[in-house]
Length: 235
Ligand SMILES: Cc1cc2nc3c(=O)[nH]c(=O)nc-3n(C[C@H](O)[C@H](O)[C@H](O)COP(=O)(O)O)c2cc1C
Image (cartoon, rainbow, N blue to C red; front, side, top):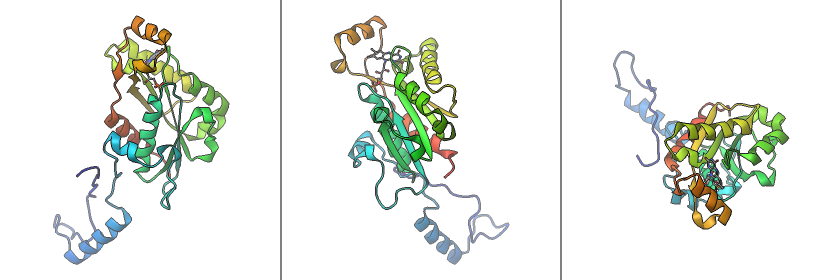
């Protein structure tokens, strides 16, 4: 069942009471026809691999086809320095789009307006224990975000190591960034350090703190979190 979730309800039309699953064939067939054409059974049609995600047309620009705004609009506003959080945000937006929402991933630097969307997800990388641009964005847009914040995520190497103390510092960075708000759904994702993208000073810092180096992003966990966030959103 590649990428499609089937949700079978307990009782289907055409079932006779007390007979278990013995539907009237004609009614059941009619129900199936209607159900499949209206998407009754369909979960999210997932882009199942990273390459699927990258192959989608302009992930950054949200959906623009005639089926856009089926369930409401979601802004995934992210901060990034070296690009890894942008890819996480785009994967989240893509996953949410595959569930029928109009989701757009946008860099916080472009000052996206929260009031133009029904819901907002915020995300940023942890640098030296802080997620600075998200913090500044929250301070600028607190009023609009209060009503709309559906989830927030942090990307950092503290989530790629086992030490609880380090993970706690990553979680605190996210709490601090979105304070005084709290989000029901918080995502903590191991990130990526590409030595080719680091300055000499950054290389020194990474060595000093003995950070793992490489790409630790878990795309399945990221997509699962995206689906979790939208489960309790009002359309
Ligand atoms: C100089 C430097 C400092 C970092 N400090 C932290 C940190 O304090 N906590 C953490 O979890 N990750 C830290 N990281 C790892 C980044 O959060 C991680 O590489 C992330 O994926 C970067 O996101 P970006 O590519 O979107 O900029 C640091 C990385 C660098 C290069």
